Image 1 (cartoon, one colour):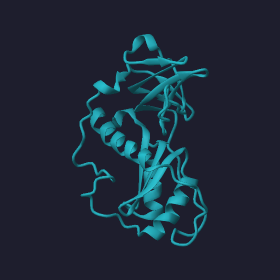
Image 2 (image 1 turned 30 degrees about the vertical axis):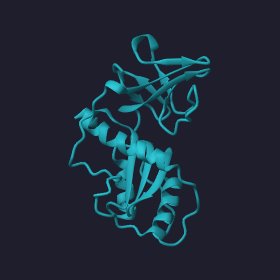
Image 3 (image 1 turned 60 degrees about the horizontal axis):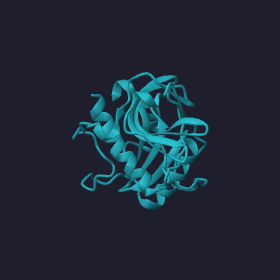
Image 4 (image 1 turned 90 degrees about the vertical axis):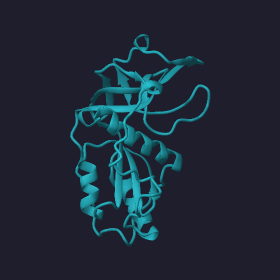
Amino acid sequence: MRNRTIGVLLAASVALLVAGCAGRGAPAGGAPDGAWTPALPSVPAEVAAVGTVLEADDGPVLCLGAIAESYPPQCSGPGVIRWDWTAVDGEETASDVTWGAYAVWGDWDGETFTVTGEPMLAALYDPMVDPSAPNPWDPSLPPGPLPEPEAEVVQAEVVDALPDVLGAAFVNGRVVAEVMFDDGTLQASVDERYGDDAVVVIPSLIPADAG
């Protein structure tokens, strides 16, 4: 169901951004040997997301990373095509910047997001959370397989190797990495390299049929 999947990913995404973005570094010892290039998800793709749409001088963007808590807020993200402020409610404007938080559906080409469905106010969006979907931030979840010294190496490699990493953190025996988009391809790649449950990939943009 659309609501259920987005709800799980959004909760994990927010927690990851609060934890902070990982620094990049060269992997050493503990990670699998040899250079690694993960398989990439297919684009263009129909996707869904929950985030802030913000328009300043350069047109509207979909903020998928950290948002500076200023007034108006500051953020970055892919450009949004076919966004119409007159078709939505809940926006704010200050200092020639307009923004609002929405659930959105559209086409992702790897660089820009094109709106194809009717946006919904995030405040009115009530995602159904699948209780069987594991949340890496849940303290009741059994620990993952990575000891902390090895996790530091894996995290550095993941941040360098995966495309469009928005943040990464070590959480209870796992490396949790937020990326711009994944259709399952990146998760399969890290599972193959590091083993099941060692790295959890959380996409900000998910396939629309999974949402």
